[in-house]
Image 1 (spheres, rainbow, N blue to C red):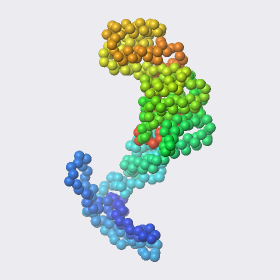
Image 2: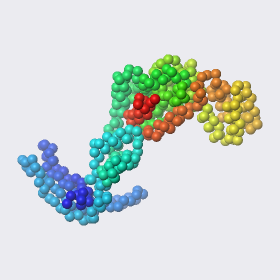
Image 3: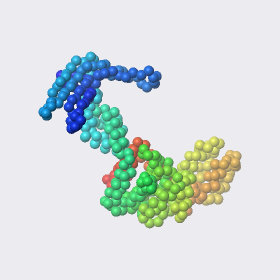
Image 4: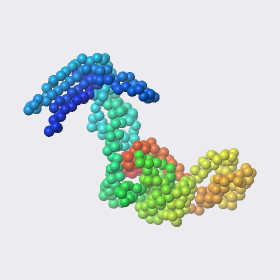
Length: 410
């Protein structure tokens, strides 16, 4: 009876090959329940599983006939010592599953946009009319993608560079810069396509930059540099992978950003209060006004002990005062009435009010932006598709599909 009808799995047991030609001369196949599971006296908290081995003696052995191009059956035992797998579960047996080439391509494409494997299987199940017709389970896909990622390790940076060079050959306006150390290891990377560079020429007066998003398996920091167009839509100027969030990395990033963009440096750059970024801006963007994200500051006010009671008053002071003198007077009044004169953090943000308070920064064009929330929203969007298991090429492909591909951008 055919194994699919009998309801049992098979596995390869013994293989003998010719030492001279490497040709298989004998092959044995056994029931998947052949032998016995190894036992251990070591206590373990792992979930206990039912026994899968029963010492089944069912076997098929074939032998190659000498000097003839054919095999003969030399041993066959069809008797099993266990119940057969039921028809509704036989498709789950390992020997009955097969990850076809089309399934590999399908899973690879789905994984490029980080569609979870359980959703991939659900889609396949609908397409083929039931789970029993899919021919695989989640573990098969996990193992395949793991093997693919392992093959990429060690060649990821090289593939990334080749991809960028190919893009540059297609369009000479595509810009990229990749750091390589003396040992040939990849460092920081920045890239921008022709459309993004052209957008900077129109809308590059204000750049929004956030310093809090990590991605990919190498722990590199993903940094998009954003702006806003005349329709109040977020536009992307460039993207970067940084090896760290240090001042040196940010200096490299901003210098390369200036080289890649047409025209003058931005009039304003909006960031959070990252110290390393602040130092880098002083060094590289000497004519650019550095504005701190007001959302970060207001959010911190609510978290500081003893300040929450007067938060509403402070908001009215920050947003409602048109002149610097009015803001300073009202701020002093609030601080005095709430006995916050000696509050070190409030004193520190008041000292840098020229970089975030609206009445102090309104003399510089800001395109209607006062925070880096556009970057935060962008990061939130990316996190739906990107995770720390991604290789550089995975991340690049996803970003290209989401942001750079001409068919997906208006």
